[in-house]
Length: 495
Image (cartoon, rainbow, N blue to C red; front, side):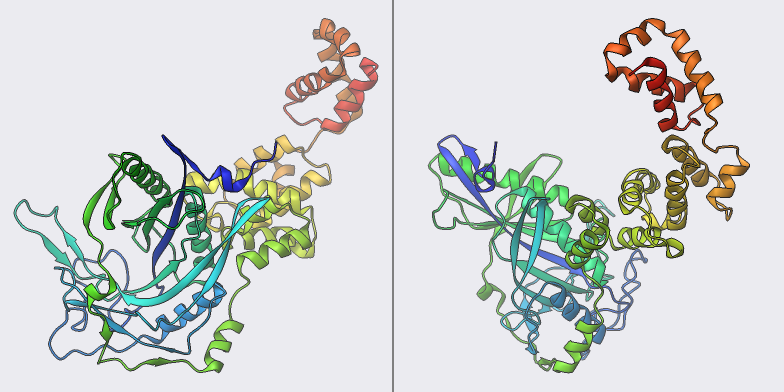
């Protein structure tokens, strides 16, 4: 049965179907050693107020100076999003008052951002993808952080983050479900990591999203949206969208109307709650920052950044499918992290070889990734190298070891990190696959003798062959060649 993706995205209400409309404003912390307008460090985890310059603290007479690397990172990201790079952009003052905003305004961009419209292709399944439009990307300062849990009577302010460069990446309202929004953020984070413009660490707050949600009857005009602020995990983004959509549907079906407002998502209670009425642009009294000249980019500067970009995920995926005959699913999994993609290619081409890419992919996506995840480290820092994976595949393909023994070899290598190659390890540990037909004959005879009733049944039920193969493999400690065992069993049982 074929399912219409558009209908699958509709939400059932008490009075009919509803369509959820989602747009995201993703705040990505720029990877740079210094802040956007000062030389203060951006290193995470310092003592409160230890990474604060006079500019960040808004001392009188201090003037901002643009960080060239932050500009370059924004341009690289725009190019990665297939977006228009605006040759001229302007920094504005966004005026609002909060204890952790020392200046009383945020330096941001409004009418003239550094990056204009672009798009991202988001794969939802191997057969189905969507394109999400990018409205804009602009640079702005982060605020500090208010700490309310340090004292029962006072709040404190940590300005270490004040002035850190952020890229605000604003999508168009092109997503129609929580799953689409989660896939979009995952793909965006992958692109940022490939480029190196943001590490995407949501636990540290280096990537977070403001989620705009509205609902409507299919085919009607857009409804009133509510913004859910500062959601800091992909899982919570999905939960916030589903929770807020249900809240809005219930209100409308009960005869009420949606008020445009800013809300917060409480994952512990599974609810969104009102924070404040939604501000419009005029509430912030934007005006060009008089301390900063317009930012003008030479075409040669943009071209040089474009030429130095790495191979991006979509291009790498297409190449993996073409060069290594991988399925769309396998290629998508491997390119999701740049380190994993590099690990795969290094293993496939180890020592100028061109081994079975599918076999290499299976080991990386299976046992090797499971080990890395258990250690909570990237695959490049797991206790097994790409060379080891290549050796493992070679040992299986030339019949030295079976797939079962290969798992044991991998476990030994993980537990005993060393420089000995796996072929030597297999030989020294006596793990070579048993290929002596005489020994296999005797093992098969012993299993058949111990299971004469099943042997008779197998003659009329060939599907039982697998059970006998498993028993022989078990009796030989997994060392017998499975194909040789199968061939001997077929002869003995007359299958």
